[in-house]
Length: 114
Image 1 (spheres, rainbow, N blue to C red):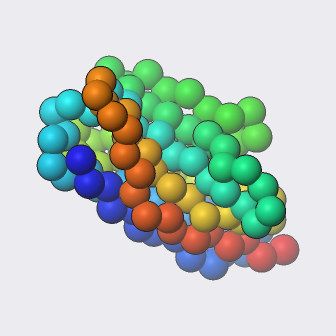
Image 2 (cartoon, helix red, strand yellow):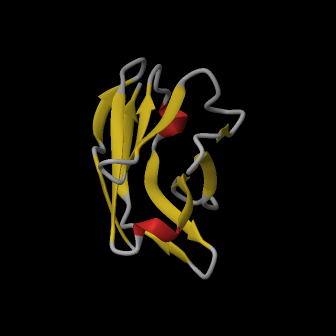
């Protein structure tokens, strides 16, 4: 499984961005796809996750502001980020779980200016 993340950039506080994670390869084996982020000097943390059945889960810090969704026809997962705060600044990574391994995409940098 290969994951290609895109959509990061610079945005002002209160603004929005949409990240995309396109999966290729053995996509039929994917159980769920997650978005993680890692801010400078901090550990990588789970932001949001979505299963193949569409069940979603969010970190408390992003509930009500971020929405994860998936387009199975395009093998793509999106992370819509609204009301961005400076503390959302981080490198965002997409991650996929299968029943035999897990995979990471390259990161995409999100910078929120205050």
